[in-house]
Length: 293
Image (cartoon, rainbow, N blue to C red; front, side, top):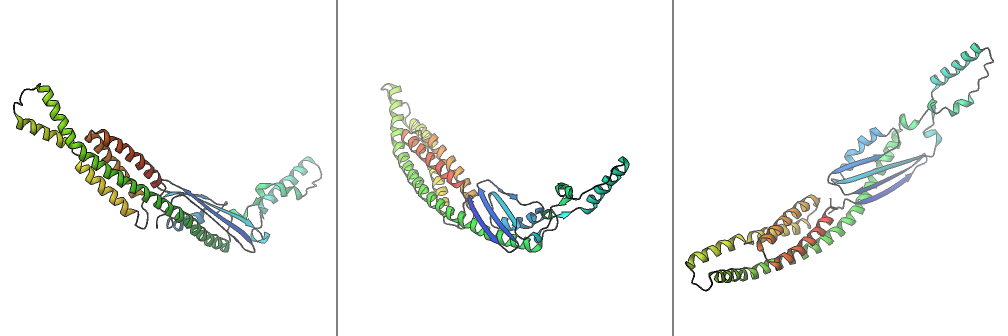
């Protein structure tokens, strides 16, 4: 089943103690690149989940975002750094003693000292929370893959239609080449006769030999054969399962090389015009291929 590199998936779950939301968005890229957006302290989990994601994708830039909302205060209570807070109080008491003023110290202002409070998210993360997040990640990957599968099927359908048009243009080019060959031979013969100004050919056999050599230089039968083979390989790829984007991209480059050589060698206005149409359609085909995994 073909997959598009572009897709989106979202899933959420609510437990008595927390609410979790995963979002996965991807776009086309030459290689697989994972971009994680996780709460503080979840780096170890990111490394743990890398293989899970890589089993679901082989190309593209994939952004994975996890949002956590704690519903139960007991699940992640902030922790006071008692050692540092006590040191601050003792320092204030010593300062008051040195200045000879009453040490009227209230602990209430300590609530506003941010660095005295440890964020539980950067401390130990409950294992059941990690497991819930991992299960939801797998569910989100399925939603994301479903969207990529749907778009991939549409891409293949579009590519198949464009490939049929390329086949038709290739056949038209082959027909134009066949028609152009005798006309080119006749035109060359007439030009030689004009240059000789009515006199007989000094060596007709040699003239015909040179014309044959010239015709061989502009022969594009091999290019047309390879072109047809590449297009048939594309047909086969579109019916196969699994990643096909890189293979199709390679074949597009080969097809472009053959059609360019064919157009240059044929030296025919009709062939050149058809080659331009072919390249235009091939570029549209290539743009769609860039979105396939």
